[in-house]
Length: 169
Image (cartoon, rainbow, N blue to C red):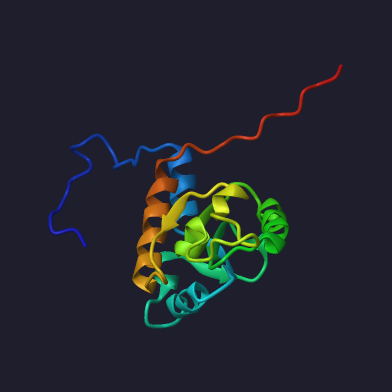
């Protein structure tokens, strides 16, 4: 609600918002994040708590999806084993562009206390990670803060444009 009156006839017409379409697209992307929850261990419990009514991720536009084909953010929460590594990569490849990854917890970041032959020592060895959440297990507020940081990161990015196919003739 405006507290002052503006006479637009004296100021050469109506006000115009000047922006680029890219900024508008990035604003829309940052405020409608669809996340696939890939819970592998105890961090998944905190991620499920974060999706509940107490923390209300819906107000930030974050909606948890069950399919990677419908989401643009992957949240890896927990210990990633070598058997799961190939499946994780396939899930990541199934996500549409643009896509972002959040590594949640010490086990997903560095393997945590499980320094064994069967554990991947950080999910960044399998897929590129945008945001790392430290802790064992990180609190839901930390995940909420990470999603807000991701929103800022998306707003600052320039959209990647698809290159038109080269003509052969």
